[in-house]
Length: 408
Image (cartoon, rainbow, N blue to C red):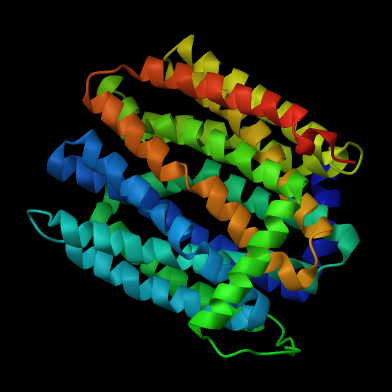
């Protein structure tokens, strides 16, 4: 394992530009973990409603449907470095607004949902720039390693985030913990100044006509690339299935199973171990096997692993099963990101990232809302898990017979 980790980091980590990119990602995601833990806890404490907690979670993904395409146009036509920096600055401002809406006795849900929506709008506008800047600062042969580094950081936070974040939330309270999120965005913006100022070959004025033409060109390209498009459809189904129970996880562990918050965060942390292992493993298998085959198999296994949650409700067991789910899910992400970066021209990569992300993310608010609605109607979490597992396994099998499965 030590050698695997060494091979994973040695090449991309020596790149100073990539160092600034992944360090800013680390800092901002630390704050994001506090936000993800604190928000449902605050809402549950003030309302006791799983419906409002799940709805708040789902609203955070609606901007991916509305603004992803605009983010792709910006990434393909303007300085990605500036987009990333400005995005973090606006995220800190919207976080202050969110803190204000939560710092009242009776929550005004209209303002709360607006604050969540505004904060969530930053990510789809900057994510295409984040993904499409990697080929500009990393050699083609290191794409897999670079994507694995990013995912390993994300997965390490999946392990440490619940423990550290949960401890901060319990010690300081949810509202005070959100100040850390505000600071993380500010620090991240400062780190991103270390990215190189790449000279843009062309710049266009932002007009509705230009945006429309750029979006149509990107959409036309994306829909004609059947392999890439099939992958986004597979993620559409898996994201719907995953978020049926993931959006309601804290409620399920703390209310239905009556576990204290510390046990719920331990289970989450155990789940992150599998994702962490997937980083170095992916550098060994992504280069050796067809991407379509890996995506189909890993998605099917993730679905079957989800069904194991029906066997036992012990929080340690749940954490181990979540580890298997996250392991296969991370292999999914690294494989697909690398396939997309290698096959899509750089001048269109931002829009293709945006379009495929928009398609795959559009099911998240629906899945989280639907799961919360079922729970609110008295449907047990066991049924949600069963539906989610079958859907995800089916998506993997479907991908195997789609153009994605025949990718070479």
